[in-house]
Length: 180
Image 1 (cartoon, rainbow, N blue to C red):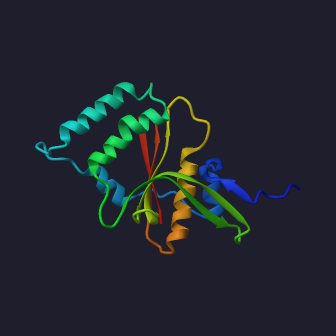
Image 2 (spheres, one colour):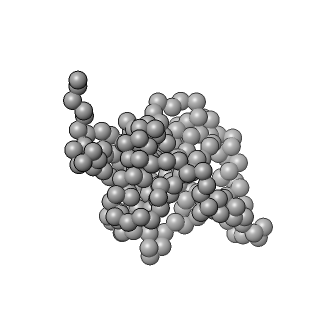
Image 3 (cartoon, rainbow, N blue to C red):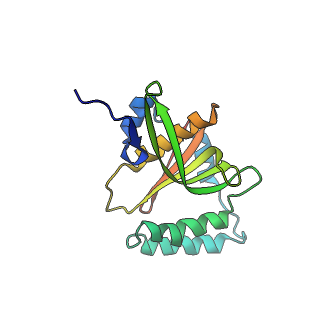
């Protein structure tokens, strides 16, 4: 029997494998995410027209954008407009993270594409992730698996039982998840 691999990259995880390895289950109800999705901007909100322009541009071009174009042309301007920084958290991108598992005999690590966390230079207490900006038609790995392993790593790093939220993007489709 082959010896188990001691290190595994985040990009190599599949969702079911994360669920089985770490004993997590998919939630059927996410009240916080449902609440966020129900928020409607008032008609006179100053950013409403800009957000609609972003949405229409993405609708027309998302099929032709590669991963970097999608990040640069849509995701980054969207999150800049929403202004996700405060004294309590800010955006970090392409930051390393790791998690030990199987009685600390194995490690998984990788770069997290986008997270909200405390800190100015060093992310601490991450609580929201956006992961995997993959075109709809070309997908060579499991974006949900990558999101879940990053969320599990964050929860172990945080040393608390607070929920971790995340979204992965596959073309024009955004999927949410939570880990508690």
